[in-house]
View (cartoon, rainbow, N blue to C red):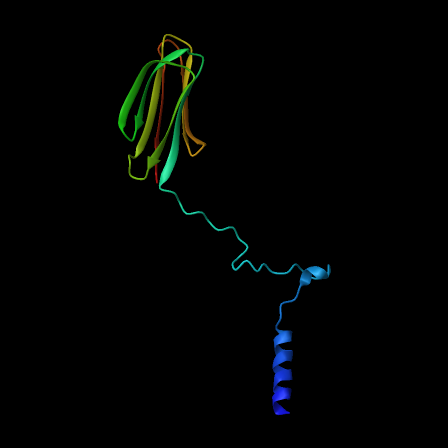
Length: 140
């Protein structure tokens, strides 16, 4: 008889501790998330790699372009405008991004540096053999 009473009390206690579905009654708040953590978005870990894009534009038709990459300094003479170069950079590959363009004769020339799709630097110049120059620290 004692064991039946003890079992009944334990069963009642466990039933009282069972989760309640608050979504059935519109007067009660929403049931808490059972996803096993806070409902706040979890921060993504910072990546050790960045995607860099250099862009050259303007009304000039051609330009001499000089730019830095993890491999070193590169140059393209008589490059058609608009022009762009995209590459990946790993942490500690190098610290400063640079791109400059000199127009071939006249018009405007622009440069831009994008990191992971966001513009971080831009410049514009105009006139005969004008130079637009952009630089930006990677800052990993």
